[in-house]
Image (cartoon, rainbow, N blue to C red; front, side, top):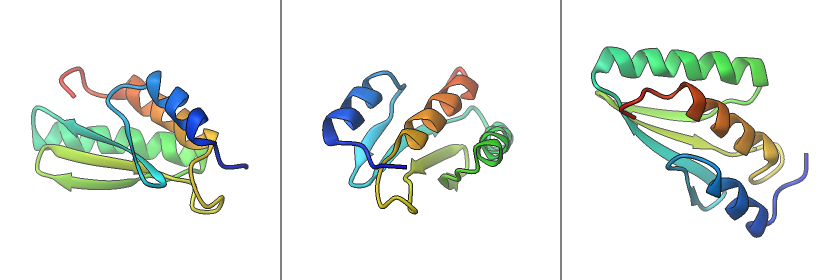
Length: 96
């Protein structure tokens, strides 16, 4: 899959919730109401990632998550990153 242009990444981010570009990644921070709800959200992300065969980096700090997406095999951001970000948004906790 081809990497996206800067304009394509910017356009894609405009349709997502709280995602930002950080170099060759798109990143979203999520704060959940509790640790157990954060872990439940990570499990939902894991299910989406497995179905897409595209796996984010997730940093868990108590009830706060940092989710980062990039297409390592393509060497940058691809449509797969934006698509998985949209799926993650659809399952994010209301408070996140």
